Length: 316
Ligand SMILES: [Fe+2]
Image (cartoon, rainbow, N blue to C red):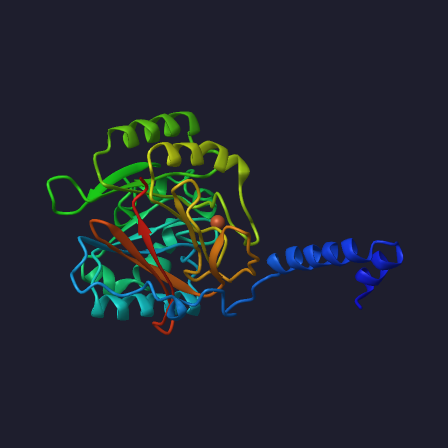
């Protein structure tokens, strides 16, 4: 009998003590850190619902975050992105912040962005960036990055559509989640844009997570600002980084939240929450295949292996 259980039993509550001990053990277990490269729950190969569609997706794209570190790990992810591209090209990449460490200096863009992704840039793959916390330090509060053409940022927050049908298949909303963002204007803009959007799929990306089991963790202040808007307008996916590792949540009020921060900066340990669908802290990036009725997400490691897949369906 373990010490805690023995103590509770000695206190005269053997049955209840046992139950309490079970609950403590369970909750402790739920928040146990998941170390880098440790296998996570629900491995995709055990999930019978994943059968790759044979038809081409309407839109395909990739995503990274916390990548601009200039490290061999960033290069390894970039190499894996290029190898994946050669098999299945994707025309654009969402880059969810901390684009250039440590202070966002645009003078480092060549070494930390243009060189690692040179093969993709040569193929005219477009990167759409948002500002991470590191990107606003020595950059005139992010302006230098906004004005850098290869980041394709029309402003601190902006939207764009992709897809060939008359009604754009996906509308993307890039937001500035830093504390000093122009929140009043931005939230009014996001509300308006989402209300006016006719796109069947709406995807938001920003640097900071609303929900995370990584070192920084969940951000209730940010969630209070954004989660009601996401729910109101049926945003299918919120992609972010900031915590350096990978965590996908079960849909929360219709939105799938994914932390995708394994782009090259040193990894963090992650725990997991009851809403965690899959967590694994490793260097990685993601691809997304968008169909009429579903989005297939893949998290891909530096060896090219897909370590998590999910199917996002439309929120009714
Ligand atoms: Fe960050």
